[in-house]
Image 1 (tube, helix red, strand yellow):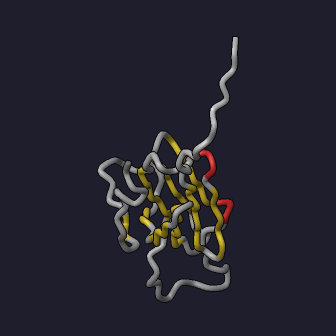
Image 2 (tube, helix red, strand yellow):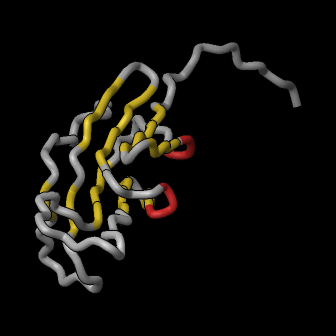
Image 3 (cartoon, helix red, strand yellow):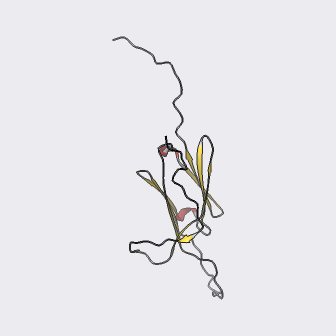
Length: 135
């Protein structure tokens, strides 16, 4: 059986270089993540500063989990940008899930720009007595 973290690789925030053409303007970044594991769950913690919860999208299609977010960083009307060192843009990251993840029970929480996605593991089969019925 494959482990839950078999295909996951860590990396820093970086701009996504896509071989396909974008249909929306702006830069797209791959948010940095921390991944934690225990016997019951695998947890992905993604840094998405400036992204409100209504602008986060988490989709599961086949065995691919997609995290996306659009920050709402705006400059107040009475100010103008003098120096801008933060790289801003949309966030996009995908993960291939192994068969040990219980896809029906994935949960997510966003708190102060930190997205926490909890991926419960499928429990091992528990021993039980099988009833025999007569026809």
